[in-house]
Length: 268
Image 1 (cartoon, one colour):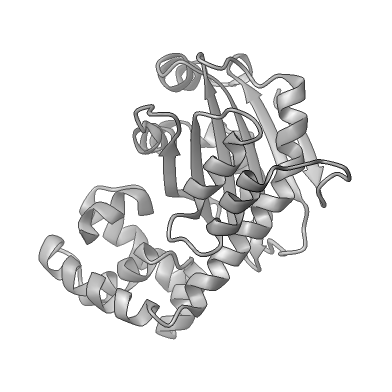
Image 2 (cartoon, rainbow, N blue to C red):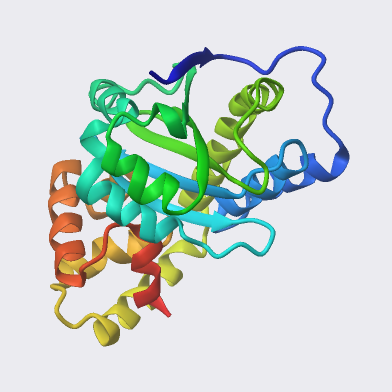
Protein backbone atom coordinates (compact mmCIF):
# COMPACT_ATOMS: atom_id res chain seq x y z
CA UNK A 1 0.00 0.00 0.00
CA UNK A 2 1.27 3.53 -0.72
CA UNK A 3 1.92 6.01 2.06
CA UNK A 4 -0.29 9.13 1.97
CA UNK A 5 -0.05 12.65 3.51
CA UNK A 6 -2.19 15.82 3.39
CA UNK A 7 -0.20 19.06 3.36
CA UNK A 8 -1.44 22.61 3.89
CA UNK A 9 1.58 24.81 4.60
CA UNK A 10 5.37 24.41 4.56
CA UNK A 11 6.80 23.36 7.92
CA UNK A 12 8.28 26.11 10.07
CA UNK A 13 12.06 26.30 10.17
CA UNK A 14 12.83 24.60 6.84
CA UNK A 15 15.76 26.49 5.32
CA UNK A 16 16.31 26.83 1.56
CA UNK A 17 19.37 28.30 -0.13
CA UNK A 18 19.05 31.27 -2.47
CA UNK A 19 19.82 29.20 -5.56
CA UNK A 20 16.91 26.87 -4.85
CA UNK A 21 14.52 29.76 -4.28
CA UNK A 22 15.63 31.43 -7.53
CA UNK A 23 14.67 28.33 -9.53
CA UNK A 24 11.27 28.21 -7.86
CA UNK A 25 10.63 31.91 -8.53
CA UNK A 26 11.58 31.39 -12.19
CA UNK A 27 8.93 28.68 -12.48
CA UNK A 28 6.27 31.39 -12.28
CA UNK A 29 7.48 33.09 -15.45
CA UNK A 30 8.57 30.15 -17.63
CA UNK A 31 6.69 28.16 -20.26
CA UNK A 32 8.01 24.90 -18.74
CA UNK A 33 7.55 25.44 -14.98
CA UNK A 34 8.12 21.77 -14.16
CA UNK A 35 11.71 22.02 -15.36
CA UNK A 36 12.35 24.83 -12.89
CA UNK A 37 10.56 22.81 -10.21
CA UNK A 38 12.93 19.91 -10.86
CA UNK A 39 15.97 22.20 -10.59
CA UNK A 40 14.55 23.59 -7.33
CA UNK A 41 13.93 20.11 -5.93
CA UNK A 42 17.44 18.96 -6.80
CA UNK A 43 18.87 21.72 -4.63
CA UNK A 44 17.21 19.96 -1.69
CA UNK A 45 16.92 16.24 -2.57
CA UNK A 46 18.26 14.42 -5.65
CA UNK A 47 15.42 13.38 -7.98
CA UNK A 48 15.99 12.06 -11.50
CA UNK A 49 12.61 12.65 -13.17
CA UNK A 50 9.54 14.87 -12.93
CA UNK A 51 6.22 14.36 -14.72
CA UNK A 52 3.57 17.09 -14.50
CA UNK A 53 0.15 15.57 -15.18
CA UNK A 54 -3.25 17.23 -15.53
CA UNK A 55 -6.48 15.37 -14.77
CA UNK A 56 -9.56 16.15 -16.86
CA UNK A 57 -12.65 14.25 -15.67
CA UNK A 58 -10.28 11.92 -13.85
CA UNK A 59 -8.26 11.09 -16.99
CA UNK A 60 -4.53 11.95 -16.80
CA UNK A 61 -2.67 13.84 -19.52
CA UNK A 62 1.03 14.64 -19.30
CA UNK A 63 1.75 18.36 -19.54
CA UNK A 64 5.53 18.23 -19.04
CA UNK A 65 8.18 15.64 -18.35
CA UNK A 66 11.88 16.22 -17.65
CA UNK A 67 15.03 14.40 -16.60
CA UNK A 68 17.84 15.75 -14.43
CA UNK A 69 21.57 15.23 -14.55
CA UNK A 70 21.93 14.17 -18.16
CA UNK A 71 19.58 11.18 -17.86
CA UNK A 72 17.59 10.17 -20.92
CA UNK A 73 14.10 11.64 -20.68
CA UNK A 74 11.93 8.53 -20.45
CA UNK A 75 8.90 10.31 -19.00
CA UNK A 76 6.77 10.59 -22.17
CA UNK A 77 7.37 6.95 -23.11
CA UNK A 78 6.58 5.72 -19.60
CA UNK A 79 3.50 7.92 -19.28
CA UNK A 80 2.10 6.71 -22.60
CA UNK A 81 2.39 3.09 -21.45
CA UNK A 82 1.04 3.92 -17.99
CA UNK A 83 -2.01 5.76 -19.36
CA UNK A 84 -2.81 3.01 -21.82
CA UNK A 85 -2.38 0.00 -19.53
CA UNK A 86 -1.91 0.79 -15.84
CA UNK A 87 -3.58 4.03 -14.71
CA UNK A 88 -6.66 2.23 -13.39
CA UNK A 89 -4.45 0.30 -10.94
CA UNK A 90 -3.09 3.53 -9.46
CA UNK A 91 -4.54 4.84 -6.19
CA UNK A 92 -3.80 8.42 -7.23
CA UNK A 93 -5.97 8.02 -10.34
CA UNK A 94 -8.88 6.91 -8.18
CA UNK A 95 -8.28 9.81 -5.82
CA UNK A 96 -8.11 12.27 -8.74
CA UNK A 97 -11.41 10.94 -10.07
CA UNK A 98 -13.08 11.63 -6.71
CA UNK A 99 -11.53 15.10 -6.42
CA UNK A 100 -12.13 16.25 -10.01
CA UNK A 101 -15.82 17.01 -9.41
CA UNK A 102 -14.92 20.03 -7.26
CA UNK A 103 -11.14 20.29 -6.85
CA UNK A 104 -11.24 23.39 -4.59
CA UNK A 105 -8.09 25.47 -4.92
CA UNK A 106 -7.87 25.81 -1.12
CA UNK A 107 -7.67 22.02 -0.57
CA UNK A 108 -4.40 20.70 0.85
CA UNK A 109 -1.84 18.94 -1.30
CA UNK A 110 -2.23 15.17 -1.15
CA UNK A 111 1.11 13.34 -1.24
CA UNK A 112 1.39 9.65 -2.04
CA UNK A 113 4.53 7.52 -2.03
CA UNK A 114 4.91 4.28 -3.94
CA UNK A 115 8.08 2.28 -3.46
CA UNK A 116 8.65 0.00 -6.44
CA UNK A 117 7.72 -2.97 -4.25
CA UNK A 118 4.34 -1.34 -3.46
CA UNK A 119 3.18 -1.13 -7.09
CA UNK A 120 -0.03 -3.21 -7.03
CA UNK A 121 0.04 -4.39 -10.66
CA UNK A 122 2.95 -6.78 -11.39
CA UNK A 123 3.07 -5.80 -15.07
CA UNK A 124 3.17 -2.09 -14.15
CA UNK A 125 5.98 -2.78 -11.68
CA UNK A 126 7.92 -4.92 -14.17
CA UNK A 127 7.51 -2.87 -17.36
CA UNK A 128 7.96 0.63 -15.96
CA UNK A 129 9.72 0.48 -12.60
CA UNK A 130 11.98 -2.53 -12.95
CA UNK A 131 12.35 -2.09 -16.71
CA UNK A 132 13.52 1.54 -16.31
CA UNK A 133 15.36 0.93 -13.02
CA UNK A 134 13.04 3.20 -11.05
CA UNK A 135 12.95 2.72 -7.29
CA UNK A 136 9.91 4.81 -6.34
CA UNK A 137 7.44 7.59 -7.10
CA UNK A 138 6.38 10.46 -4.85
CA UNK A 139 3.27 12.23 -6.12
CA UNK A 140 1.76 15.58 -5.13
CA UNK A 141 -1.90 15.94 -6.16
CA UNK A 142 -3.38 19.42 -5.91
CA UNK A 143 -5.64 22.04 -7.45
CA UNK A 144 -3.74 25.28 -8.16
CA UNK A 145 -6.88 26.97 -9.54
CA UNK A 146 -10.55 25.92 -9.13
CA UNK A 147 -11.70 22.75 -10.91
CA UNK A 148 -8.21 22.16 -12.30
CA UNK A 149 -6.32 19.18 -10.95
CA UNK A 150 -2.62 18.39 -11.35
CA UNK A 151 -0.12 15.88 -10.04
CA UNK A 152 3.62 16.38 -9.77
CA UNK A 153 5.20 12.92 -9.97
CA UNK A 154 8.80 12.60 -8.81
CA UNK A 155 10.83 9.49 -9.63
CA UNK A 156 14.10 8.13 -8.29
CA UNK A 157 16.24 5.50 -10.00
CA UNK A 158 18.94 3.14 -8.82
CA UNK A 159 21.58 5.88 -8.95
CA UNK A 160 20.16 7.54 -5.83
CA UNK A 161 18.12 4.61 -4.50
CA UNK A 162 14.66 4.65 -2.99
CA UNK A 163 13.07 7.64 -1.26
CA UNK A 164 14.32 7.35 2.31
CA UNK A 165 12.46 8.75 5.30
CA UNK A 166 14.59 11.91 5.47
CA UNK A 167 14.21 12.54 1.72
CA UNK A 168 10.44 12.20 1.97
CA UNK A 169 10.24 14.58 4.93
CA UNK A 170 12.16 17.29 3.05
CA UNK A 171 10.12 16.81 -0.12
CA UNK A 172 6.82 16.96 1.77
CA UNK A 173 7.93 20.34 3.06
CA UNK A 174 8.38 21.56 -0.53
CA UNK A 175 4.95 20.45 -1.78
CA UNK A 176 2.93 23.55 -0.75
CA UNK A 177 5.62 25.78 -2.29
CA UNK A 178 5.49 23.83 -5.56
CA UNK A 179 1.71 24.23 -5.68
CA UNK A 180 1.99 28.01 -5.23
CA UNK A 181 4.73 28.31 -7.85
CA UNK A 182 2.67 26.34 -10.35
CA UNK A 183 -0.41 28.42 -9.62
CA UNK A 184 1.59 31.59 -10.30
CA UNK A 185 2.86 30.10 -13.56
CA UNK A 186 -0.68 29.30 -14.69
CA UNK A 187 -1.91 32.78 -13.86
CA UNK A 188 1.07 34.32 -15.66
CA UNK A 189 0.38 32.25 -18.77
CA UNK A 190 -3.31 33.19 -18.79
CA UNK A 191 -2.55 36.87 -18.28
CA UNK A 192 0.37 37.12 -20.71
CA UNK A 193 -0.19 39.72 -23.45
CA UNK A 194 1.87 37.52 -25.77
CA UNK A 195 -0.53 34.58 -25.51
CA UNK A 196 -2.86 35.55 -28.42
CA UNK A 197 0.13 36.00 -30.72
CA UNK A 198 1.64 32.68 -29.65
CA UNK A 199 -1.71 30.91 -30.09
CA UNK A 200 -2.10 32.33 -33.60
CA UNK A 201 1.42 31.28 -34.53
CA UNK A 202 0.92 27.74 -33.24
CA UNK A 203 -2.40 27.43 -35.08
CA UNK A 204 -0.59 28.29 -38.33
CA UNK A 205 2.12 25.75 -37.55
CA UNK A 206 -0.43 23.04 -36.78
CA UNK A 207 -2.16 23.70 -40.09
CA UNK A 208 1.13 22.66 -41.72
CA UNK A 209 2.31 19.91 -39.37
CA UNK A 210 -1.09 18.37 -38.48
CA UNK A 211 -3.42 18.93 -41.45
CA UNK A 212 -5.71 16.14 -40.24
CA UNK A 213 -6.98 18.38 -37.43
CA UNK A 214 -10.15 20.41 -37.86
CA UNK A 215 -10.00 24.18 -37.35
CA UNK A 216 -11.64 23.83 -33.92
CA UNK A 217 -9.23 21.08 -32.90
CA UNK A 218 -6.32 23.31 -33.93
CA UNK A 219 -7.72 26.12 -31.78
CA UNK A 220 -7.87 23.83 -28.75
CA UNK A 221 -4.44 22.26 -29.34
CA UNK A 222 -2.77 25.65 -29.84
CA UNK A 223 -4.06 26.85 -26.48
CA UNK A 224 -3.08 23.62 -24.74
CA UNK A 225 0.42 23.99 -26.22
CA UNK A 226 0.56 27.48 -24.66
CA UNK A 227 -0.08 25.96 -21.24
CA UNK A 228 -3.80 26.62 -20.84
CA UNK A 229 -5.90 24.10 -18.94
CA UNK A 230 -9.33 22.94 -20.08
CA UNK A 231 -11.14 25.69 -18.15
CA UNK A 232 -8.86 28.37 -19.60
CA UNK A 233 -9.34 27.07 -23.16
CA UNK A 234 -13.10 26.91 -22.64
CA UNK A 235 -13.24 30.49 -21.38
CA UNK A 236 -11.05 31.72 -24.22
CA UNK A 237 -13.15 30.02 -26.90
CA UNK A 238 -16.51 30.60 -25.22
CA UNK A 239 -17.43 26.90 -25.04
CA UNK A 240 -18.04 24.35 -22.29
CA UNK A 241 -15.12 22.52 -20.67
CA UNK A 242 -16.69 19.24 -21.80
CA UNK A 243 -16.46 20.46 -25.41
CA UNK A 244 -12.77 21.22 -24.94
CA UNK A 245 -12.25 17.75 -23.48
CA UNK A 246 -13.96 16.11 -26.47
CA UNK A 247 -11.99 18.17 -29.00
CA UNK A 248 -8.73 17.44 -27.22
CA UNK A 249 -9.48 13.72 -27.13
CA UNK A 250 -10.28 13.65 -30.86
CA UNK A 251 -7.19 15.65 -31.74
CA UNK A 252 -4.86 13.47 -29.65
CA UNK A 253 -6.36 10.37 -31.25
CA UNK A 254 -5.73 11.75 -34.73
CA UNK A 255 -2.15 12.63 -33.80
CA UNK A 256 -1.53 9.34 -31.91
CA UNK A 257 -0.34 11.24 -28.83
CA UNK A 258 -1.23 11.19 -25.14
CA UNK A 259 -0.45 14.62 -23.73
CA UNK A 260 0.89 18.14 -24.11
CA UNK A 261 4.50 16.99 -24.02
CA UNK A 262 3.99 15.02 -27.23
CA UNK A 263 1.76 17.71 -28.74
CA UNK A 264 4.65 20.17 -28.58
CA UNK A 265 6.46 18.16 -31.29
CA UNK A 266 3.84 19.39 -33.77
CA UNK A 267 4.28 23.07 -32.81
CA UNK A 268 7.86 23.50 -34.00
